[in-house]
Length: 128
Length: 205
Image (cartoon, rainbow over all chains, first blue to last red; front, side, top):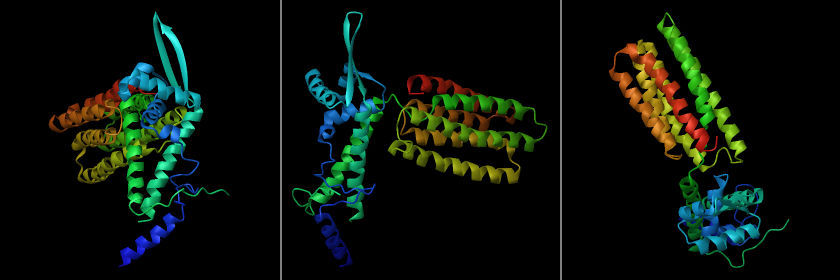
């Protein structure tokens, strides 16, 4: 019975639309803070890989994420447009070389995303 | 202060789903970072400095006329080494703009610490019993175990180094005590330097 009561109370808190995050901000699954740009798996993979590497080439990312050239190009371009990653094109001999780096803005976006995910986990645990 | 309300209410069935999805996303990020694998929070340069300190300690310890003097020399090195490593790890994390206690860092610490605590407690007891000859083997095995356990969340070279320490510890346990100083110098000095340089060059400092 006590458990049922607790569940009912939790539902009340969740229904208020505010999950209590770790850093005191109100975060819900549909808040404006939620960054859908890096939520997409390929883009999240690109940003995560670049977060632990100073730079990665196009081929490095392609092998790491096991995706096609076209797929990587499309997602990398979206991250570039958002200024989350910076792209440098050069030649190694006659072979073109494309390198990606995570920008400060991209790193902040990843940190916000991590905060958001952790907040969701903490919130749902706290409400149990 | 603006608080954004969900478009639709979260029902009971959706709540665990959100939680699971968030955990899945975090696992994906961690997995990608680990596979990208060019970075480890462990500082290679810190290991090199610890290795040099250990070689110095081995030289001083070997010249001590008493066993207590020998033990005190190594204990001084054992207190100095974490200070050097922590400073180096903090410096590396700051340089890479990465949080010091990220998930992987926290796990490393949680996995590394218990064997080290066990090692400290056993050292006290063996000191009381006067069993100095067992200490080098014990220290190398315990430290190796701690590095292997903590290194499970790091780049592969870290647990490999831990395994090497365990091998050195096993050798120290089953060989005459006369070789102990040499093994300690080779392991705490040589292995730290040997593995520290490639970690520093290939894995972010």
